[in-house]
Image 1 (cartoon, rainbow, N blue to C red):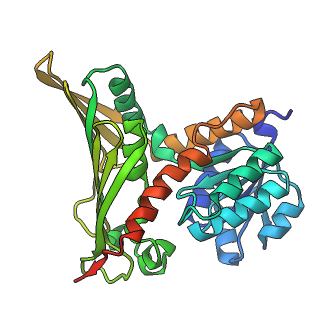
Image 2 (image 1 turned 30 degrees about the vertical axis):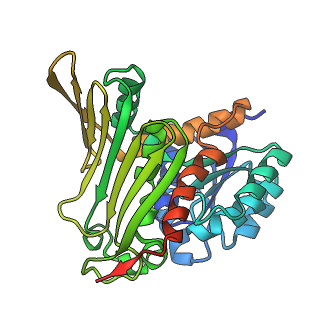
Length: 329
């Protein structure tokens, strides 16, 4: 079995997330990096950041050279068919979030992964964020008692973050539901199955997209736990906050910026807040998830964020879409 740094890796999709994984993997010491994209300018942009990468004009050509691993960094609707093709070619697969737009085809994908004996991991990178991980450890150590409610908020002014926002896949199709991390975090912290989902969503702002720019989601879990998730593409300033409310206290993780994070904990037994300031780097969570994925492949261990884990947030979004309650103002 190859050591993980000796594996050949094909990155499918040379957009911003594909370039990020290319930089991260090169920094981790992976020497045999390859990438494909039908758009020449995208391929060259990746080569500018990672000069030693081998480029292909098509996914088929990249698979024909038999890489060990494929990183799928393409629009969401392409994820499942591209993952299926990679598995059939004998590759292990890392698939960026969301795993899919719907659950259609996910059973077949899981069956193919089992039949081929190949790993499939979903890029739920926030599970590797230092502040969110610290909150997870505190929760599991019962510092706030039993978790009763999760409140997750993510909002940013998309025209400032991505001036090309009108051309993005997410603004044309999934809208704010592309911000699936907060949904996944609610499920991850609750550690129990989803029982029911309610959602209101639509285009409420003035940024000029047709896909939803605002969603309010309620998730009910099977055993006395609720989550509320707010997602928007228009608010200023940018905010990202996750609150864990327990029977004996509260944990709040706030990181509006990528380079800094605050974890605030209130334990009823102590009767006071404790605030921890963490210095972070956005790429840290990508380094951690990429390294763990490749180590699992090399050692034959199950990946932590597998198809079943990635499916959970897709099911919530699918239920939100099925409610047909979008409004436009």
